[in-house]
Image 1 (cartoon, rainbow, N blue to C red):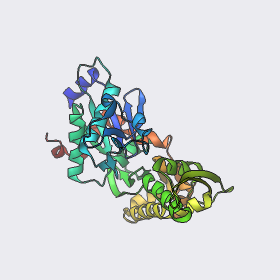
Image 2: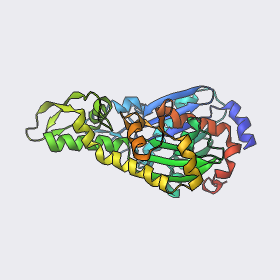
Image 3: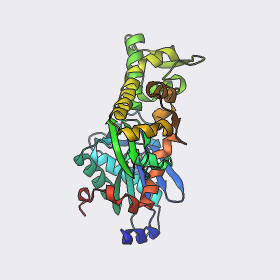
Image 4: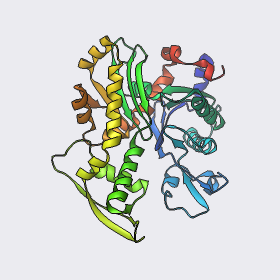
Length: 350
């Protein structure tokens, strides 16, 4: 570990929030240096990245739903875990090279945040992908821990710190104390499920078919978890499932809120179950400490208010919820000695 730290002077060590929807990379002393969609465009049937391996991230995201038959834009992560090993490796390699740049003598050390509920096989797949993509050494950190660190919570102290990380593919709910997770719940429900709920609602109610990107825009512009003081409306264009022709409709925030009820209720239930499993002294701490929410889902209007009403706790959004996990990974890398007791060295083969 000491040698690795010394070699880090000559490499661009980095932390990666490998998200289902978005990948963020944070470099030490530089903050967030990359924020791009977790999308790769490949030639159909070959998994070879188009444009000489450059159709990754934002470039590939612009192709979603618009590719010809010979090309497919892939999201290689589902529910926070790798669903396509080869494409994930290509994506990670592209991002690492983009951040590392030229002229570095050594490959970088990389910390990757992963959902706490993934299996040992899935964790091994992340490590293998990162090593093949160009990392010298890979450390995995559970997303709630990285989020807590990134939010500046006192998770190494003997008091309860609670974080709710609502990502694209998973929601992580954890109570932490003394530099480790005391109790945690992870469900594969997140922003993608909210988008899917909006798509299904419009198809069922209006016979209108829209894509994932447009559903996400609806969620961002008029989506909410609680009633709004002034309800919103939005025009949505798509394809009529009966006539097959393009059509435009107007939807309201009330109906979108109703459409989002199922995934949001699953998140609230997970928070409640985590609190039920907390030790009494930690639960008592939370009365004063409250809980913090981060991830893209934390930006949904009224999510903090809904959780506060459901639990009776004070709920706050972290500063910059989208980058909270990524920022935590670099702090984790700088303070590995503090976390050494939580690292499972057997999964790395060292």
